[in-house]
Image (cartoon, rainbow, N blue to C red; front, side):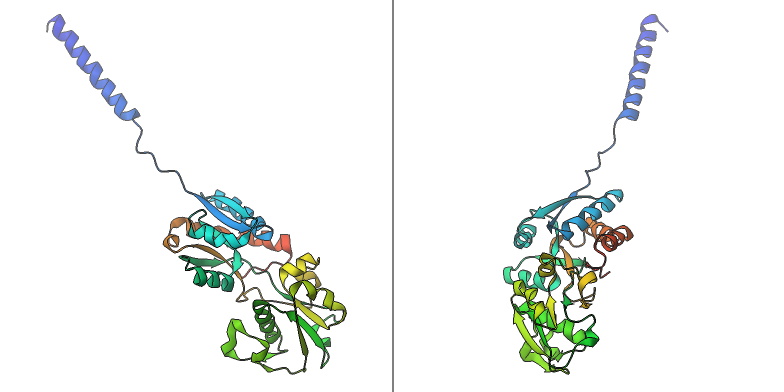
Length: 272
């Protein structure tokens, strides 16, 4: 072999070696980044709990961005408009009403927590002390009235038509074994009524403003699996996406259950 041919063979070998190294070092296809899921919440316990969900989700490969709304009534619209990906702030009946009123393409995918209404009294230490003919107070707004009547029925103090369901009114009451007198008052006035009624049924927001905690201060409270439990919602088109399953699993994890119990002492209740 001549010197020229030797030189050409050497160059060819060098070029082939470079191609082989380049083939080994060439990066493979880059995986798309994991989605950042924006979750809209109201301030307070919903935001605090979702922060713990975010911590749990991060350990499982899901990144959450918790977006706190000062005006919760805007959250459903933001979800429908794709400004956020999920929401956690309202009860199932409230969500259903918003979805129907605005034709939002949204759906609930899991229960979250229950903020229980409860019976508060300055005169009784237990419901068994309630005397026939006593006066009690309940919320005057339609949703509050229905929710209070359901709670009173659960404690066997009243009964009402099954057909009334979540829309029960005083006109639907069919049984009142203690002949209780029932006052309907605006939520803001229920706390002040405690000096003149046997007990008052007060919602969680009004109770919190008055410094009351259901688990500590009430003589009876709503079950965790109330029909008024809060729900986690997403757009209907997203309900089968992997991140939705991951989000629900993180929310329903043992870590989050422990956080809810230790942080709120059963004044915020877990229905799952």
